[in-house]
Length: 260
Ligand SMILES: Nc1nc2c(c(=O)[nH]1)N[C@H]1C(S)=C(S)[C@@H](COP(=O)(O)O)O[C@H]1N2
Ligand SMILES: [Mo]
Image (cartoon, rainbow, N blue to C red):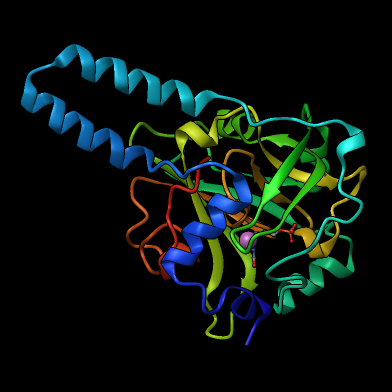
């Protein structure tokens, strides 16, 4: 059994929500669901203006920035959680050469499929951010992340108009052979604080934290922050991928939208 299972085993939905609220001090918002229900209800009442204002507010809130901290706020230790070293021979071979042979593939519903080496990612304009990571297990840590904005890469590959989600395929399988994966909609994918991080606290990203790159999507909970990202796929729907719910933990009942 992997540590992934040991860590999250036994957390039922209610405890998960309580944990999330404790961890963040904020209520979870289920954005899309709220919007469609509000739309429907307001439409019924015939108050179209109210709908527009509410929709606007939700969309505006999706653009808000996560709080950023200072060096003085950095946690003395940033815990590693879930997989700490992928049980995958191909990954281990890449790690032995410091990921010099690793390439990030970006494909699916894009005009120009492309792949990027670690050196190429490091040459792109970078963003550095000091943010708080909130895990549903009830711990938080503040770390400094440096990486390439995902928006830069998406602009390179040119998503087709049918693309709606960005899926992150990871290197670590569980004991059933199911690899970790995650997905974002475009609001989060193009958010300025969404980066593919290759440094933590001014050091090369350690394997325990997702080397060579891990996703940071700062207004979401920890389980959205895919480590060991190998391939990015743009899709219209994630229903045909793995359990069909858009992520490894989502397939086991967690909320797909873990935004705060
Ligand atoms: N590939 C992969 N990504 C993952 C996980 C994992 O097990 N595998 N665990 C998730 C969870 S639950 C959390 S809290 C964070 C932990 O990141 P850290 O190890 O850098 O603290 O990674 C997330 N991304
Ligand atoms: Mo987590």
